[in-house]
Length: 357
Image (cartoon, rainbow, N blue to C red; front, side, top):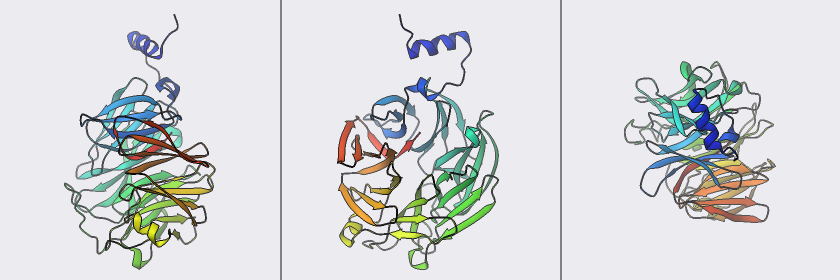
């Protein structure tokens, strides 16, 4: 009788020896995504390239984004901002192996990234009272002990990514100060978002801010191409019905390029870009708006290419030569050169992000 994956893991547990298993042991997922279940509970899903469910693991509350270990079948699931938990999950065995807690008067902000070949985890955090940004450092090779922290260079950080050189982090400092209990925005008139590039030991290497007239355009989410092009999605916190650009492109040492859609399309986004990703070949960028039910496509020079309408679309990741998108109704959509194609519908409500492994 062939040995099943479940049986193999059970035999290891019985023997009292469980090695670090690779992602094949968890069903070869290509993506992670959090969702709300029909009963109101929450879970982290692993999805294959064909959008099939590789695993589903319960979460104690609403999840936001996650980070997948580059070698081990291990994911860190972050609470929705403001959040007090980050769970390190053994996705092969379906169990929580570590619970990360930020320091006192600190909260997680929904995103994190592995570096140094998976030896270190960096987490996006902010002070509960001032919303000043910090990056926490956790030793993933030693049971995720916290070993340090440093400032992000701004207020209200959100997304955090590792640059292709493996030695530089880029932080999306949204510029927003919030009440620690109810997410009320406290400084909309004075917010100053920026992109901050930092070394792994916390040195601020470069910082880029938007022009004064766009100081209310919160920089939220990031995608990075292999050649170092950083693209960022924004959310407008100023007067409603303003057709502000929601996509930015940046190369270190240069001025950001802001990309806009035609007026009617820009207004349809309702000032909100929820996720961002490069197309598989890197020559196109897409952003999504669950508020507007829209996906907008741009060239890597920032020229608008077109729109796709889909109710409550938000999650977005690179998939093959195109994209994988998700919506709040459980839909998983493949988007390629021939347009969108429904891949599956899971009985859940997908949260804002899809994380590519």
